[in-house]
Length: 236
Image 1 (spheres, rainbow, N blue to C red):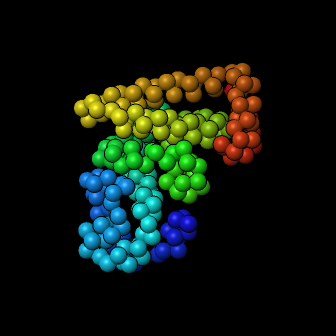
Image 2: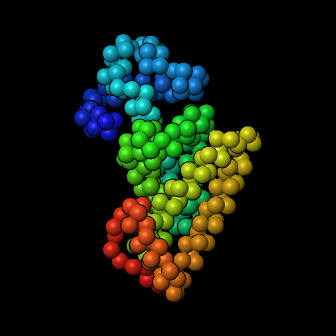
């Protein structure tokens, strides 16, 4: 539903400005009051718009969260591309992929805490694993895939590695939500160490002979629908 609404809505430049204003206002209210207590009427009033006008751009609070997810992915991609342009070192890139995502989300730990409650509800439009968030999920995986470009990973491994990195970042975000250290330095330290372990694991799976173990594992992931049905085997 929300994905269709985004595709059909083609606002003008003025409409883009209004849409951004509504989203900025909504995020401000979510941060100040919390996600659940904030209503669309509150958002419309704070945006100095009629309720109908607010609904024109965002048919629900869930649609606002989807726009928030889109914005997060765009900002994350911008930061990561800058790092990738300046370094070919895989460890540097993967560290940047994990840490820069935390930087983008630094003001939204409380909002993320409210949204994480929906993770286990398979059909909820705000669950990161639901059909409704598929577009944002694939966008997020694509951003993490940027860090792996130039890594010379076998083609069959690249997608699986990007998804593994995305899953690792979800665990980091959960820790991030509860991290009360100064500027969440513990989470960032954990992110850097996770990147180091991840890259070491990638080096191991590309060693001669390991492909005979990895290929069946990838086949199992394809059968489960967790990665696309790419052809080819891991070679080393």
